[in-house]
Image: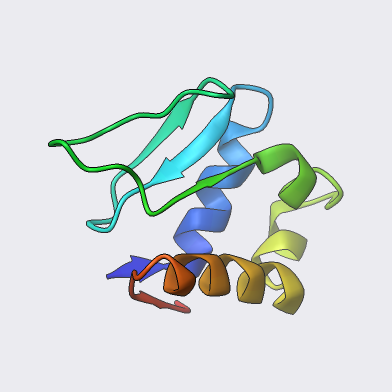
Length: 87
């Protein structure tokens, strides 16, 4: 099961390094833009672009508690067929 705030934390950490790929088992990887990674032959559920999502927040805590951001991440994962819960 994926956890929303853990993804936000990883997005925060990935800023300036690349995009964040998220797999169904909770594995994440920072990838270069345009890359299409596979893990055990499976594509990620979602690839998030950190800067548009979290760079506007002056502190990580603000991003972790922003309802709009959390709902966007959850909707993206669910639409891809994944399970996610807000932790």
